[in-house]
Length: 389
Image (cartoon, rainbow, N blue to C red; front, top):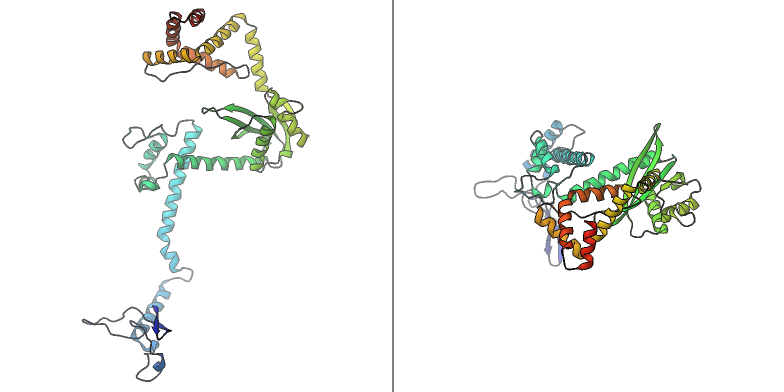
């Protein structure tokens, strides 16, 4: 060990080491071994100087130990490598555990099952699909069992951690898709829709030829704060650029028939075509089929009357008073969650299916609501309720 000795404003180095010989009740004082040294003026004076290190028993003992160590340790092994064996083992265990969690998350995503419930407490019988699958794996895997039963801040099962791992896996999938597209012509398919929070999301899909096969891959949902043609064009280009996909390789665009998407002058397809002349626009075949179905149903008199009445029922039940009565009746007649009626749409036939399904599930509460309103004091509402009933 080293220190500094201060004397009359001057500093002198002072060296000392741990005691090498302990006697009964006292320690033998040897300069540079267990005490420091400051008498540098007489350092080389015989009888007053320091004991030469190479003559001391401590130095000889340390030298013998060092030679023995070199014999027992191979040339390509260091002390640091010996000390990190436990660390390497722990790293491998952590990687195995995180990989297992990722595989479970991938399983839930592929099978389209929920990862967890709204609340998963330690007292709950069901802790959510991800945790329950990991508990099952832990019965056969000692590493997983060790990590799950370890510190609570190192289980990596918090919802935010699960979402983060899924986001990383999604980025890897997108990178693989982008790598497959590079240098090959591709098509863009995009459409906007609302999620459960009523936020507009732009879905972007690419269709390309790779390994002698045609592939159609979803890239991502992009939050659409604006739904004008200029903004939607920017969102699509940003998705492609962020993945390293060259938009100049685009040879086709596929959207619905909305003017903001298909407009010949200022629509999304026209704006992209100005930048990429080879990107030809083709009206989405699924949307065209949807329009064919809607027009066909309208020409069937019985079906047309049914959907007209269904739409009228939705509009009537959307008013605040009727909606409140309809909700209260559902709660009184059943303990199940309240179901809302769905609006019809000419651009998405699935909306008609959802509307019919909602009416079937709430038929009894719906008839009771119309009966209550038909017998009410509000004349106009009562007449309308009778006509629908």
